[in-house]
Length: 316
Image 1 (cartoon, rainbow, N blue to C red):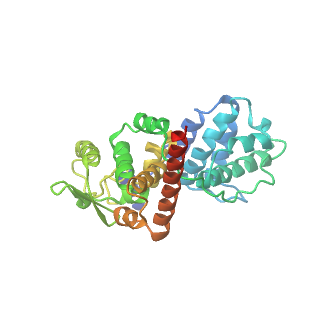
Image 2 (cartoon, rainbow, N blue to C red):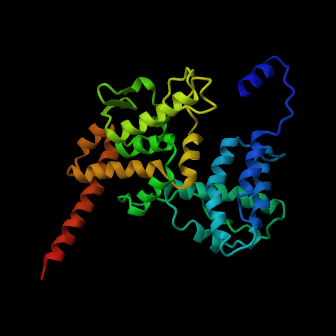
Image 3 (cartoon, rainbow, N blue to C red):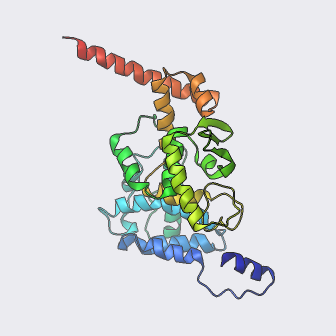
């Protein structure tokens, strides 16, 4: 339908009378929020979508990003508050206390326009973010994933494309961009090899199983697609572009699964298992020298701490 509409619009023959996908998405997602906050968040998203005399309209992808950062904060507030105007500066501080790096920045960058909208439209009395700098916190130390994190990923990543993305991050330390750019020509089942971001690696059992499961579904759903990317969607099956960043975000990030976290755990695990050799990490995962040294240094610290703890336990 979308392709047909594009052609009709190009010929000036399209009479568009449907409710926009953006409006449908806003109504659906805000309906999932606690009652006392839903109306304010809905009005904020509509304001972002349409803009006004002083604010330019934002792309739907920006709304997806903002809402993804705001939703868990709002749900946390709803445990002890009933509406947005009750939120204090301390509530904001408590909600973002455990966030690090880009998550911290994204949360504050999303909350700021929410409260700006609420203050401008007299939905709140004072802006609790006033005086809080967005900035960037230094990222927290990378630590091995806990059993609870691993269990959550196993439970959440059930769909074939989600399982494939997790497998590529967990086995090959693939970034989201590399996963979306992966082509069918990069797969060599006969030699059991895969090329990710220009780096040739052994495929391995986990990756092979995840690939075959997804490719079987891909063939069933889009048997005639000319798109050479491994991951395709309804939007890209009729073209040649890779899936959008939101495709993976919808599959994983919005459900609490971070590919960056899985990837970092894989690199750190390799460093711990191979004596923290940065050259080895560079060769295996095609890392930059700086990144490889960072992981190797962290691995040495963890290995030293484990050795020291073992010595203490052996003392009488």
